[in-house]
Length: 201
Image (cartoon, rainbow, N blue to C red; front, side, top):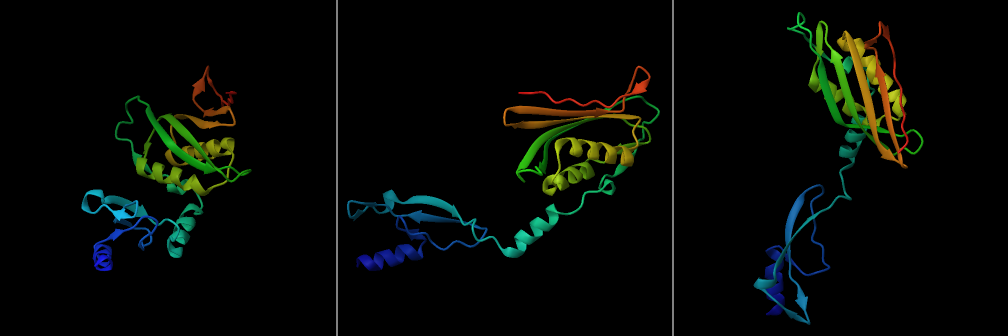
């Protein structure tokens, strides 16, 4: 009788503690655990729903697709521009991108940063979807913070051709050091100056 009840419960998705049911790779499946107290089973009132996910058996082709996407080369051609319909007006654009990620060339660990872009448009505006995709492409690129900002700066100028642009890359604190790399070609007292700053935390 007991074995019949157990078989019936198992067919309904109920399991005993310590027994992990088969889970389809990459998919969620809800199971119910039947607790055991002192050798007696507390039936319906003690049924506990548990949600499990098997993350260890990711399909190989999926992993290959992810890695191939991250290793795709980053070029200025990924940045697109739009016609500036208000080029006769004087205004600036400010974009803050809080999810910039790259890889440290020394440790191969991810670096996280917030990028601030301020520019005065001329004939073109940056297309924001392309800007997002362009920044995401750096997630698999090994680069130093200074190289990253200067590369983004040069690609932005090449694609958008702004009157001037100022960028600041604020890197998440690591090892007690806060880094901010700043570059600008905004005219200051009649001259263009590139700014660089690193502050200790």
